[in-house]
Length: 468
Image 1 (cartoon, rainbow, N blue to C red):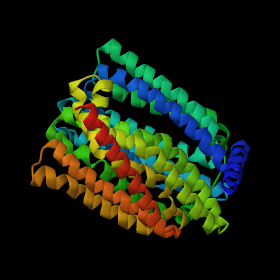
Image 2 (image 1 turned 180 degrees about the vertical axis):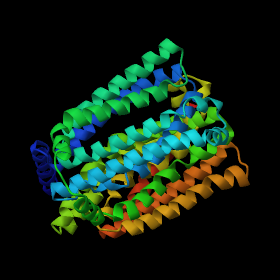
Image 3 (image 1 turned 135 degrees about the horizontal axis):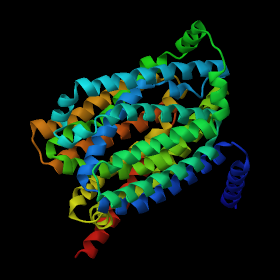
Image 4 (image 1 turned 90 degrees about the horizontal axis):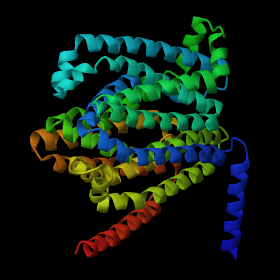
């Protein structure tokens, strides 16, 4: 009876939260539902796209996208992460203006880089086709940076619904374009790059002229003297000085395979890029939806000194993400190779299924730890996060450099070493987050391990019977 009463009470509380405007639950529900629809679009479009474009097209896109994303991350100076924090609009506007200056500067720098170091870049990645596409890197730097700025701005304005609807429209349009363009051009190798540019440009236009129109008008017509802008910037200097280096190291280290795997050829790089893009879907669909709202809610609770509620919020988020992700990951580990070969269209994508199975548990714990890692920001532990990100960076490099260049292992063997190392890194990061919150980590970890072991045992047993 007590269990039933508690269940009904929790259900009623959830329903009330969903109905309450701009509540934590409603914001999660809006963003999550939109991301689920985006996932479905991607899920149904990918098998069509992989039958039009070959792995080399994915490999080329991975190189261009990675270089542009790394530069754009530096360009925004880490300041968009602080956009939700200032209580005064003037301080927020100062941060935005400083960020715009960074974007302009690094867009120009990336242009000079392409002009002066084009041969070095082409020779390093061992892809002659790259010569025809280096010119898009500065454009991508600008677009990626602008999306990052307006995306965080939308979180501050709590315009989750508008952003979700527009994001769905852009996603559907980009999928339609890449398929149509590929059919017309016979799978032209640059089709995926063209689509990414179009998608980002549409996001910037929609954010600027539809969702944030009034706020942007206010920004450009509000005069703030230079001394005040500098003063406001210095209040948040830890973001470019401490948080940006940590985030850059973290993202760059996750993209290290793009800089090392070309040694195995563009085809395998393309298989890796596709596998990772599929594994990234839950992080984009679920993780980012929860991450933005989790950070806002946790920061709000911290301002009210509600540490017990932060513990509860963190633990609930951990369990929800785990129980959402562990079964699909187990299926990917056991059956991923067969499933992806069937879905993607044949032997040319065989390595993608094998890579997805190898990296499955690494990406599961990345999904789990990604939203709750904002606890470091909430508790002012950015320096500790930076040190751990440095450790992750060094470990990730070793997990690829040693098997590839020292041991000279085959491609999939190198992936096994890399996947195991990353799984341990994110597993330990999750425990670290629990300790910051004051949460006992033994019980959650035991539950996690028990669920995984039992599920894998059942699945491997069933696979043995099926393929007997």
